[in-house]
Amino acid sequence: MTATTKGAEDLKRVGGHPALDFVNTVNQWVDAGTQRDYLGDFAGLLRWSRGAGLLNEREVRDITHTAFEHPNVAAGVFRDALTLRRALHEVMQASIAERAAKPDEARLIEVWYRRAARARGTFIDRHGRLHVGWRFPGGKQPLTLPLLQLVWSAVEFLLSVEPGRLKECPADQGCGWIFHDVSKNRSRRWCDMGDCGNVAKARRHYARVRRMRGATKDS
Image 1 (cartoon, rainbow, N blue to C red):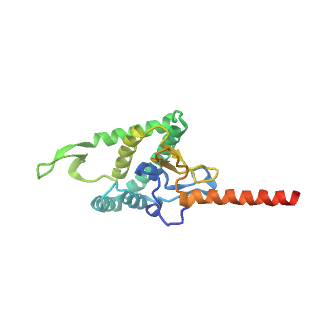
Image 2 (cartoon, rainbow, N blue to C red):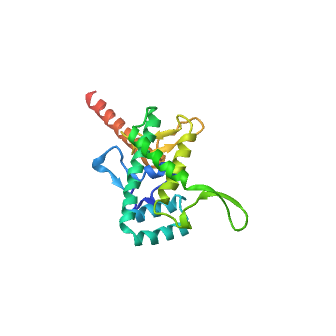
């Protein structure tokens, strides 16, 4: 997927799940020389989380206020987000390749998932309705809420996805982004047919033209 936008919140969401779109906030995982990170900073993480539906406006507002008061803590959480993103990418690639994930990355996801599990519970609101969600001391949203939301949904998704449905846009012709193939016959190949798919078609056409020209010269 080629991306010309300024931030991750503007990227096309082609993964089919927030966890997949999160690892796709890096352009060209496979080529460090052309790699670009679209999250940028903690504020970018919040904007992306809002766009992905992981946070609502009130949560973003409250967390932004806390981040303003504790910028060093927010910067540390952002670094944690990048580390978690790399771990999720590794686990997803392992699933696609049907191999075991690297222990350190798998363990990191487990640690975050346990943190999320400790913060979730059932409660009854003032109208007497039962809810399942986040419960934090004092009711204050922590700076880590985007990561807790993300890892909770990511693990739930990875445990339920059917084998062969998780795919990677071909690195030799595409971008290496990961997506959930929900097509009936599992035939989806590209993250976006209108982007990487068209680029690959153009490359194949150019190669055919070159071969035809070469054959004409030799005849």
